[in-house]
Image 1 (cartoon, one colour):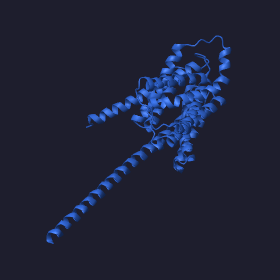
Image 2 (tube, rainbow, N blue to C red):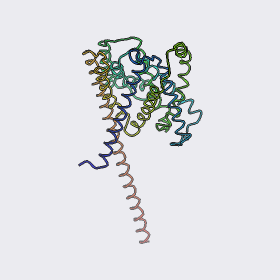
Image 3 (cartoon, one colour):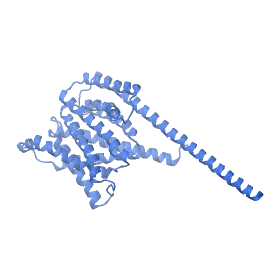
Length: 348
């Protein structure tokens, strides 16, 4: 019989997962709608990302400095910010810029298939930074994922080289960012909550995006006399982006990064189905066959991670029990010595 507390935790976990899937799904489709030339036709990915980061920065600042919903990180010094947050913000801005740009050239379904390479990128970069050891069986698994994605790319009806380069670049930047978070922040005992993460990272992203925007998209926007800023479209889109950022940190904080990986696979299948049935993107049998191979590889990777976590937890319990047993024996021995001493004193 499952206890009420366990049931409550299960329900909460599913709730966090559902919220994240819904918001991630919404932001992806919404961004595709805005950027795609066949839909809203506003092909300015840097501008869109800049709007998101400006909105997130402003809202996070108001929540922390005005309403004081949460306190800023007390251990965040200027030196730490420059050495840790700035590199992470730079990578995040590049990841968002490239990822949003890819929606102009590629279908939603194919982009989700390319995102299956994320475990490959994270593992490779972790090995490069010596955060993980090289394992031949894990590398074989990464190779199977790569082969599956390559087959899916071969069968893509709307293949665009530049779009693929953009999406692969986004995956590489995001994977590097995730590894650097572990190296530069988590390893130093700094764990930021959702709002403080945006408070520190979003302004940094805004600053990095501002430079390419001024040279690449601002001149084009000035020449476009037909464009009128739609506050409803960009306002609701920015609110969804802000909510998604909160949901990401909430999901990882309340469950685990592994749960997010598993949920991400479910979201990818939903997006592929939506892209095929509603947006009418072409999804070929070779696409599905290749992504099926990649999916199995990702599923095995998540399973291996789960088993490793379970083994680690078991080892902790065994170590804890051993330490507790050793402490108890030491205490009994100490008591025995004291008893023996008192006995000798009484005999004396």
